[in-house]
Image (cartoon, rainbow, N blue to C red):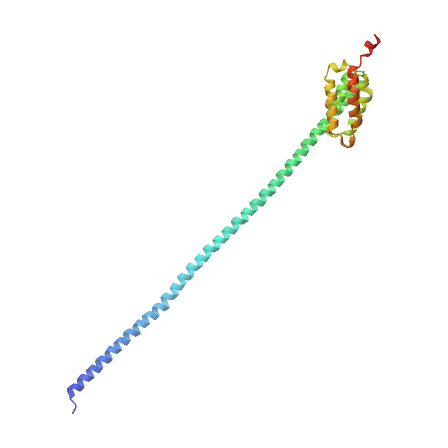
Length: 221
């Protein structure tokens, strides 16, 4: 025969166990709900924050790359500009040097033409000593100025008309011997293709003769 007291105790025990499991399951479901809710809310927020940080990091890297590219481009531009300016400066220097040289040559040729005309007049006046000085100065300036046509005209006058008229007394003034040596040296320095050989040889031969030539009036005495 079953004891009613024991039956009641078993039912109470079952009820308590059921209530215990039901409460635990409820707690578990609540916990799971909380976790799911946390994951559903905070994980997207975390991903958003992480993506923003990642995007900012990439943005910083991109800015650094752009900044570096700009700096490199500016450096190359500056280098190209410096090279261009240097080449232009060199061209300007060469152009100015040529201009200065041309102007000096022009001034020299103009002065030589004046001396040439003066020498012609002095020769007509039979003032051979002063004519020699003027012709020699004109010859040097024509030579340095590149006016070979008028230079040859002067050399012919010196060789054919002036030098045969000079005497040893003429060489005592105006440094005529020194001037003949100077023009002879210049002719030798510019004697391409023996252009001036005739007059170089003539001056080497005839200047020493003129240095010993007595004045005509002294010879007659």
